[in-house]
Image (tube, rainbow, N blue to C red; front, top):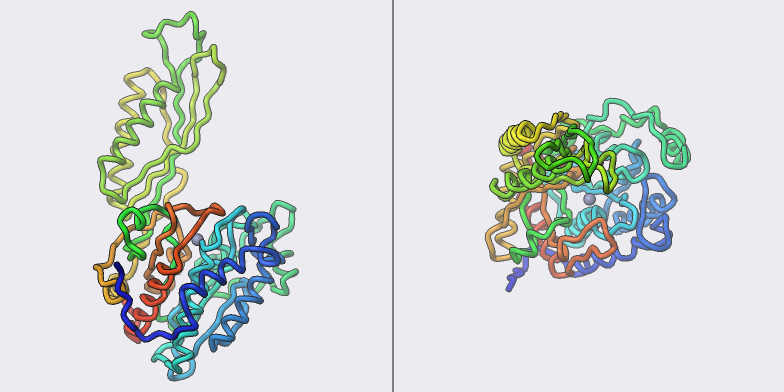
Length: 424
Ligand SMILES: [Zn+2]
């Protein structure tokens, strides 16, 4: 049973309305495809969504602009004009055949929080800026988190990429009335920013299985991706005796089972996945001579991830040697962990306790979010919202109105309690 005390909050801004607005945005003209939501960066559906969300921002008392990267930004001034801003953001783009709440809900909740303060004529020593990021998913071009990298000032240069139709990003920007040459001007000066907050659906089953409406994100996971190649000897499946085989697939199978055990024996936030494999020659009557597979390892801290990676590397070497198979392991992707600000997270934990009457449930985000990019600019913190069965990137994605209401109340309480000086 949840306690929802009357934290300063106004009725027509609500979790229910936030859910309804996300539902409203799940269909054309806000989706590029009529059956199943797909909203890609700078597409007609994206433009229509920005126009609609902008109206909601203005209704909530914000002044809006589209930045040089095509992000929608609404600003709610503080007590004194031009004060540094608390940024509340998430993404408005989506994957193909998406759920309705991934990203969009975080933006809409930011608007609901501001709408509530606006109705009470409440202002803070800092401004609030709600940002709808244009590209988090890599929805149109083969790059992701492009627009938060532009805002955080970490993009370096606009990548020279094309969408599936062969339209360059320069051309897409031009069609949206933007100038590629000015893209990097989307960067904020750190002095203009107080902190970054993001509310997002969990996209996993942990909050549901532990019966929590919301969760406190302690960090965004560190990730390694490896490509493993195992070379044995192909041979006749009928004539080659078992003890003379160098079966690359049998070695890989033992390796996968071992990788699973290593992850299972680590802390809860350690996960390891073999999600892709190629087997050659790939015929029923040939002993496999060559196998390539991926390993994805993630954990809340680099030390846990690195230790797991070391353990599994040793284990795979042992398996290969024992089976007379040659193994190569190449690191393809190395992403550091993004710790959330301890100071902001403490305040958020107190807000969760105040609103729900339960201690905050803390968890690591195994998925990447705009927050991990924004951490290069300013201290960040994140709130997760329970989603049904943990399903995401799927039209079956679902949230409860009551949970979103809880998230909104937590956000409103949090905003009223953050310090007006930059957090640690
Ligand atoms: Zn997302």
